[in-house]
Amino acid sequence: MLKHVSFVTADADAVAAFYTGLGAVVSKDLLTAEGFRRLVLSFEGGGKLQFFALPSAAQPTPSPARSGPNRNLQTDLQDVHDHPAAASRLLHPEQPQHAWMQHVALYLPDLKASVARLKAQGVTFARELTLSPSGNPMAFVLDPDGRQVELLEG
Image (cartoon, rainbow, N blue to C red; front, side):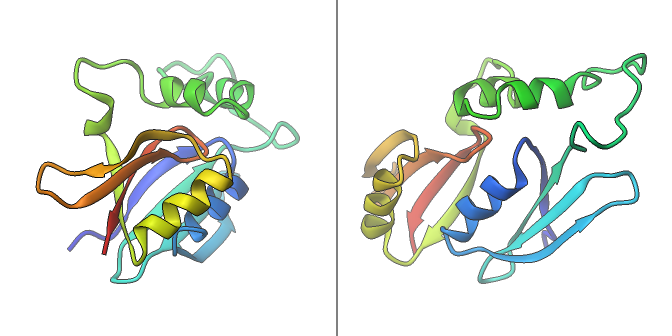
């Protein structure tokens, strides 16, 4: 059984608001010993998403001299905080596959009403409400970090 899936986020509060609006419940919200905010969102049926927010500028950060592909990730995420498409490119660099291949999928009890509410909130749609290849209604939206979220009736 899958326990959870973890992601890095530029804004834990925005992510919490987005996913709780889709039915999640915040089951943990704490600061790790390393200074990361850890947010665990639980969904009906047992699924969990875990997010780690990088330390704020006021907190100590790793030395820029550290090597590795993510050494400047904190600065980059802060720079694209208000631009989900840019955050999506940062967190998910261009790859040879289609963007929709990497996503989180959620069942919603009233998909049409949820789509209308998300549109009214100004959420970015990557794919409008349509039928999936199996004939079921679906839509794709971007979460606050630019991750694709597939919404399904269920």
